[in-house]
Image (cartoon, rainbow, N blue to C red; front, side, top):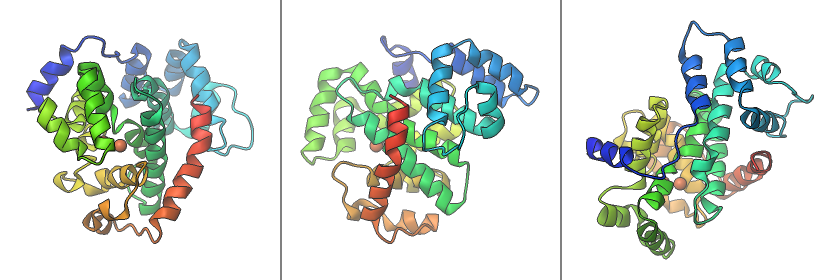
Length: 266
Ligand SMILES: [Fe+2]
Ligand SMILES: [Fe+2]
């Protein structure tokens, strides 16, 4: 299945390409021999990316008391992991801007914030990575739109009317937005953890590591427009050792925390 999906992704015209500066920055971050100066040099070549990263760092979401004006300062304060998640969040934003409206973008940012809150609460894994995973989890929805806009729109309408989206996608496309999203992650050679979370965000029990996929699964459901408590599988919450005493209250907290992020990424 994955080879077939990789073939589709590789032959899809109009698919946005991974910005080269992001690819080089990520390569550098993964390279133990690299240093922050090299990264700053690469980033400073892309003024728009740098200014967007600084705008996000200076938003109230990060809560720094003083304004951070250079990428070097940002890196010194945040560290490489957080800078990596900022680069991905800012650079891959176009991929989350669905052609059919802003709702996918808002849902994605809310899911990112929710995912990070859950990862912080359970104290496992990299919370910055959790943010990125939450942001990118539905990137396959946009790929489906690029692949066949009419069909994707029809499915979107029917799903809003209450029919199971994944069943519709499987029936009409032969694969889901999770499957094709994971193929795009592979094509772009993004970290494997992102691929796993994109692939299993609707079915975390099928993944090997629930502490990785669980937060994005829960955050995704909590940030649905028509959130229903019963949709959250209690086995996942139990496996995460995460307690949500009042899901509606937690959802409100996520929405509130999302506001400065959305404003800074505008
Ligand atoms: Fe999804
Ligand atoms: Fe989603």
